[in-house]
Length: 141
Image (cartoon, rainbow, N blue to C red):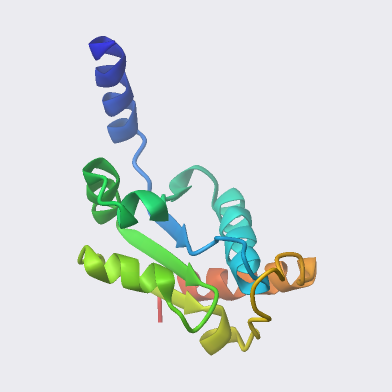
């Protein structure tokens, strides 16, 4: 078992991620679903240089995940709404994103409230991803 852990740690270190993606994606509302879907699509487009990071692991102070996230050169954080859950969780562990996107503030999405999980269009996901890719190309500005 110890050998397996050692191999896992070595493989994690050897597969350096350049872009970490963190989304507040509880899927309890339309904007949470949008944030999560956009994160997945973004990771797929960016390929092996990008990876999705675990917001719950950071929120519960899992040291390995927190240290891993702190070592990633570019960190993209996507919050769905004005509650800024991902941003606040990261603030608590002193992690500053390179790029912060809030779907309400930056892209004028309206949070429709609880239990609106499926109230979005696929075109919305595509537009969010395009916006994030443009911000990445501009160097996070």
